[in-house]
Image (tube, rainbow over the protein chains, first blue to last red):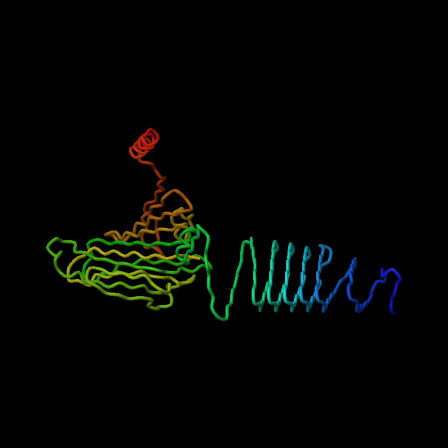
Length: 300
Length: 84
């Protein structure tokens, strides 16, 4: 039934237990305020096609398990979303010339999809929640995206089709490769072994097994031998070294040399629990030698 | 099964950053473990490491010590720097 109140104010109050309320408004300028206090709020869908839109959505803690679809086609779109509820699915689709989107989440179990096709997009996402899946797809001429995450376990995946350029203008910037980072965090592992006065053919070995559910990543190794007796010091000190996955009987690395050798691996050698790794250094000369091996990496 | 000594516990749980393995003439090995997460050093001699008859023959925990001579010289240097 069409409503046409003389002063333009058209309050609607519904207090039935179960309602369906499709509202279709076609006016030049409108202000709509909707307050919903419902026991079960299954789905809210908002479609707006307008020249300028400001949309504020606040969902409080009591409203759990809500699916919210927001589709906006507008020249300028300002969308503010504040969620403090659990089990929310939120889809925001914006096609506009300028889109300003602020999303504040203080909740658990949120699935958030934001799709923006805009000439200019400003997107701020603040998360203080547990269990969040966040997909942001932006096709825009200009995009400013701020993501701040303070969480104990975070996976951030950035996929770029095209050219990705990272410019750092901060005066103090520290970039760590994985081994460096793990060393900084105290997860580095270093192994050193020695055996003195070993006969020809004897092999020094260090065994190690990473603790439960962890993996040892080996990033470098070096080995050396030298003659036990001074009379043999000028002779070739032939030796070989290897890293072996003992459990899988898989050779991971092998090298020989005169007096020693070593290598830093461009790709770490991974030995996961419960597999045992062996670091070997063998006296390949024809006289007694002292054997040394050092290997390093990190364990996570 | 007897209770494991702390050095062996650290070895089997990977609770170390640095491991030094010294093979001894009798076939035993001296293992030295240090870590960024605890100050002490664990040094123990074990025979048949990882084997059925594994046995710790010696075990010591070395607390970190500060060389008094270096401490004295550092204090002297700091004092001199402040006076210049």
